[in-house]
Image 1 (spheres, rainbow, N blue to C red):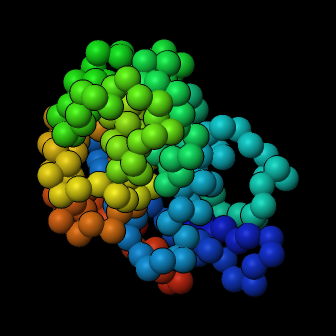
Image 2 (cartoon, rainbow, N blue to C red; image 1 turned 90 degrees about the vertical axis):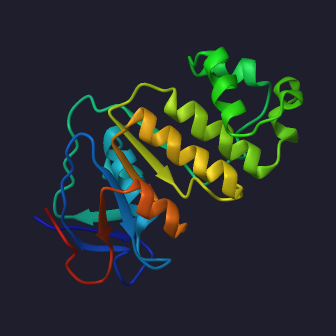
Length: 199
């Protein structure tokens, strides 16, 4: 069964005729040109997991999008504007081990002087590192990352690859960095206007 998604004010579907399934341990890269529906597909998966009715959404779907009941997702969006307050308060709010969070951030070349600052003062790259480290420390069945490497330096990208290999999460991700994609993904799904590859 193929799945399609169309925003209510659009003439053409953002996601058209896609079909694939995932198994534990896979790291699936969503491939495709800008505007082909990668982020829209992620939003639809998140809406399904969060139990949102289609009437609450600004798009309509056809076909079937099946998500296992009770699935826990750790999600990184492109938006970092919600990050504010101290790392300690953030860790407490999100039930993350504060010491482990600082340890991972140090591995991502985070300077200790940053640990006491309000995150609103962080650079975009530093905010992304916080999201990545906290995501990896969040127990989940699947990790969905939407362009996690925006503003991240080359050294930290290599460290993130190493952390992913260490943690071995099941993932769906969107990313423009070709080397990262090749080193991390176990499979690619191409989103186009045509029927895509399926397992």
